[in-house]
Amino acid sequence: MPGEFYIEGSKTKVSLKAIEAAIVSLEARLEAVRNQTDKLSGEVPYIGFAVADWQASESNLIVVGGPGAKYKLHDLSLGIQNLTGTQVTVRLYKKINGAERRVYEQSFDAAADGPGLPVVNGSWAIHDTLRVTVQSNDPADNGKAVDYDFLLEAM
Image 1 (cartoon, rainbow, N blue to C red):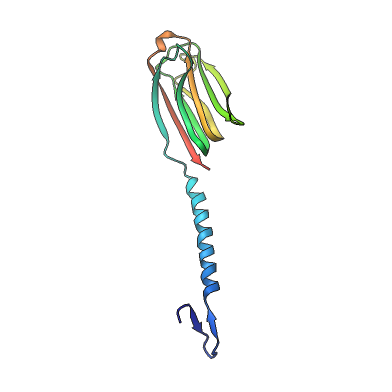
Image 2: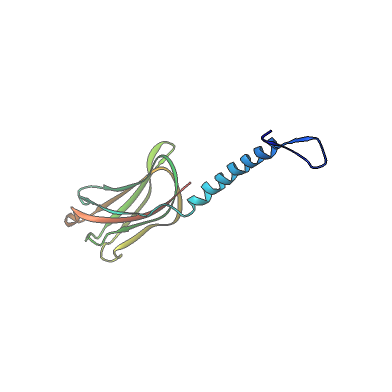
């Protein structure tokens, strides 16, 4: 019969069902390990830019993540080379106990601080969304592009 065999010199049938079940269990565990290790390479880097009236008010640059999603944010860099404001403020917002809260705020001088801002340089776990805003004190910055580049790893 399929799934059975005889041991040489014995007339006893031996079932392979326990071995087959163990193989299925090992394959499931292997798949779980593979899923976890595949995530370690990270996702494709997100790059782009946004144009807004940065001086008129605080304006959204990007939203990182998604509702119910869990990520490690390894890098978030902004390019302010097109701005001229002496006070370019970057703010990050995330949900804390269901309500969006400002968790980071820092001001930069577009001329003195250089064109690239390493806002997050390391690993930061986020769940749900992380909203990034920019605001400038110079009306000439309205309608200018602000670049962004970030790298996520799914958790």
